[in-house]
Image 1 (tube, rainbow, N blue to C red):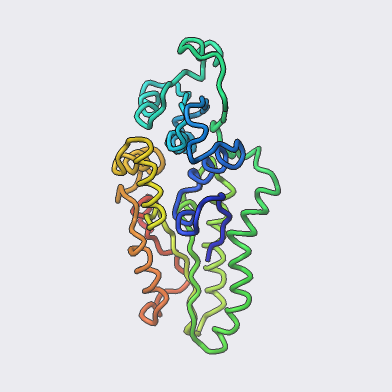
Image 2: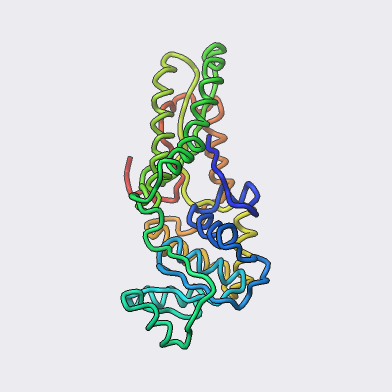
Length: 288
């Protein structure tokens, strides 16, 4: 079970499958800065501080999707090349005074500035941010389980499956609160399973990795068209920066996740209870 808020303009399959970095960048541009995603602000200058990071990398591509001219900051040669390959029009060094760096490329003023360096730094995550994610990602499952688990025990059959994430195992340093709620789902599933001993009720969690859906494919196709970069290149860039440890090196198909969920929802899975089952493409580097 998972419930999470999404940015305006996403429909449910997109929001469920896109990485949180995408939603963060999308909300920053289109909901906070009110950039017109249809292209009315095309040609305006956007400075992205931290262009080579997770949110910054996605941000460059989304900004180009909206028609903006992008100035990204990066310090090392490989990260500068990375930003250029993603579509940044200019790349400057954030270790140097930004005013001087902008003057070097003939720019005196920009229209928008976003700082994606140390996104969601732990010290800056408020109690409200923690509470919001705990409510949506964790307490939703607690409440549903509180209602349905007794009914399942009464009829001596049932399946509860929490859709967790590899972020619950590989806690992302820039989204610690998100990763913790995903760990909480796994722990909750195990705890509830302990209460089902001797019954035909099972409670498990599915540890999902990056997954492709119809909505994600549509989003990637539009992004590729706007940025003049192939879908294959966008996916390659994503796994290079976001999930370099993936063995699959591609998005899992929705059917691949659904097939696993279907099996663990069926009577055939009666021997599995209290487990965290992975369909993560090998992102989690563990044998257990």
